[in-house]
Image (cartoon, rainbow, N blue to C red; front, side):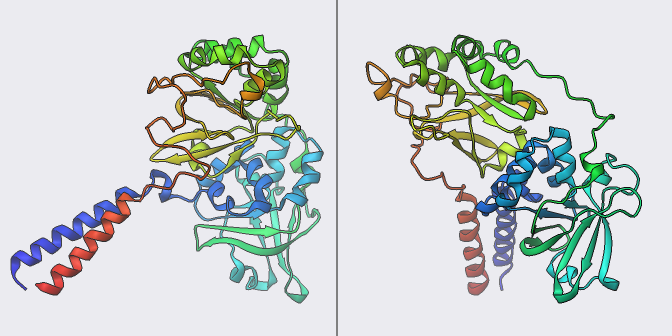
Length: 402
């Protein structure tokens, strides 16, 4: 093959390698537990609580880990108990093993059992040997998980149900039959005092969201509703002052219950760190509800490190700044007011969403970059992968013709 052909092929190969490397999202080098669980609707509550307690970030930051996931039906009794946030974190951290176990390894345990450390123990929160979990391959091929407490005590066992996700020696997600707990996990923590409460209104007022802070204060029931939930994990999305200013004429024409719903729609249940938001695979539950009393949420889409929120009425707002992220509360600025439902029936004239901070246009129906937002989720960027495919095709042609 002529030398020039070889050089051309080498250039094409290097170009392809660069395009493949740069076309993947920045966080693709590590696993993302929220993304893994997003395709399993029966594990939604477990995923939500991992995020709300901060365990999702801890899991994503570790290699060689096994997550024992619990379905919504078995999470419900745990949620109903109303455990303090720190206690709930301890209980759920028993379900994170700091070693890799997949289906094959579970059924091939040396001697039929193994004691494994969990994130509860690895974090230093567990006293003594508490925080260890015994895995035992029992008769009939059933694999049991039982938490240890102080001494040789064992908690109630749960059983392996099925493999949810397996990436050998990196992360394994296994579904189990119920929630594990122990007296040590549920003991009050004297070493971890309750975090001081973030003054979200003050944060908004000092960082370009003063008008929205004013709407919260002026809307009956809004402040009380937000205050009630901030202890258990909460995330605010405050529209920038220009966006609120443009929307205020429409807001003032709404009925009182509709005004409250619009304000409450900008608060999501659970603490979502920037990393959790960039996962972009979940619909977030809010405090707003429609006329039928049904809770209204919004979707989170992420691409290229940019996060866009898409409301139930398909208007969109981009997250432009992180104003505060102090677990259990996070506050983000967005560039448009999110609308939970059609405002026509609640206003004396057709609603005007007003110009956004980024493009100054009214009747906003895009994600801030001119792209229309529809009922379907925006697709992941494909240009890098398409280009890579074309380059590889050219590479093969060069070799074949050389």
